[in-house]
Length: 392
Image (tube, rainbow, N blue to C red; front, side, top):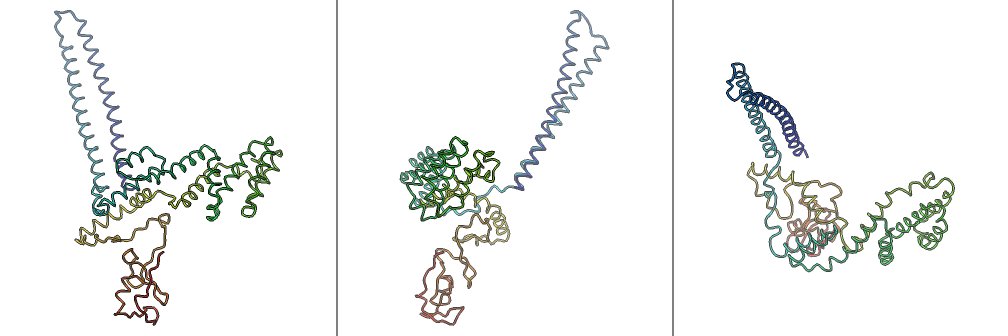
């Protein structure tokens, strides 16, 4: 952001100078044109055989001199403007690195399998965003069989669109259809949907009081054991229908629009969990993480090149430095080997010893002597082959 701010300041200087020069040039040229037009009119009124008087010659020379000076002054301003514009380019070169490819590996997406995987991730992102036409076109051009991946997103996007328009019916139908699975997830989605429908009836006033009571008996009674306090609050709203209204009651917070935003997020989270999908698009997460990490990677790349140690960048499973992406980018636990002080990878997973201590596979191989291994934390001797992989 600092780099953007520096470039933006230079651009602001150019725009300010453009504005002042444009205003000054317009005013100056207008004066010169007006003066010359008046002089031309005066000369055109003279007889055909009229000779210019010394005074008229002097006026014409003054007008020519003034026009010449004005042109020279505008040319100077124009040169100054060029200088200011060139500073923008220098600021961009100074604050941004054009060679972003220096931080990437060419073999990451090489090969037909990896290319197909990348295309599939991009298609899934478009399906998530409801851009079905774009996703279908990419699927056809890339030759991806993604029909099964499209169907759930089509339904979810339709339900989310109806929720934006405060239509609860499609979401309620979906929640009732998947009630058993949602209950296993300890989801409160169905209750929140019925709660919003009940509140909607309450908002219509005393004329819908009986309808609200019937709706509560039919749909909220099944949630008494799991949402007793919330249901008590909903029933309390009935007391204020004819006593000044809900807006002035202790339950006014239940009328806030934030409940609709909450149900939108709850449906997205529960639906993705049910379908075995991440709440956020994997492509969005990767791009966001890359944007956060890129400045640090560019800096370390430059330092490594200056010190001629760029070979360390060839590590396949880890970066040369640790980059904190923030708590929202932490999706699972990470094991660091207490012996080698390295994070575990697919090729170097954590291994549980017979005694219960955990070290990395590389550490296990280095500590093992033939068929014997002595745990580095306790005196138990064991066979290295008995160690088992642990999955976090």
